[in-house]
Length: 146
Ligand SMILES: O=C1C[C@@](O)(C(=O)O)C[C@@H](O)[C@@H]1O
Image (cartoon, rainbow, N blue to C red; front, top):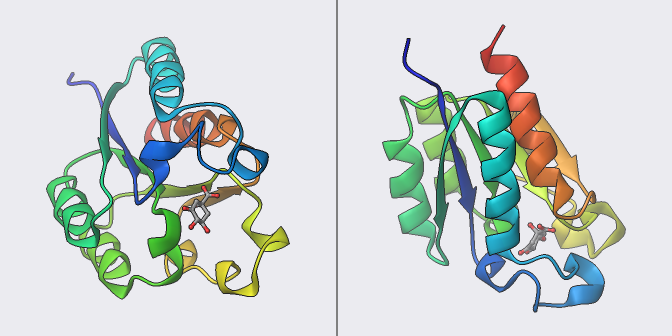
């Protein structure tokens, strides 16, 4: 049996995690997140692939490439609140995905309260810091093993 692949996709400015507005996003870097996810994937017997881009079209391309994956952990950053194109790519692929936000977007500016993605998501994890990625991975593993 082939192992399931889960993609961990991060959008704009998430390459700056750990240094960017640490009061909001904490001190954990994206490399730390990826290390932790790799440990959890080994425990869950999953293959993981990581991708980060600051460009909307690159994220659309990557989501299209992921259509045979078991699931996607997605922090689309600011594109969450603006991108019909990313929504359409997710809708086209129909791969289960969990939307992650490191910060509690609902405690922030009103423009962050709306997501173009959430109603398509299998789950949404908000405001749990960098741990949200691990929670999302565990949730997708549970969903794909059903
Ligand atoms: O870039 C980001 C990061 C974010 O997705 C988060 O992880 O909390 C929240 C978004 O509103 C913001 O634009």
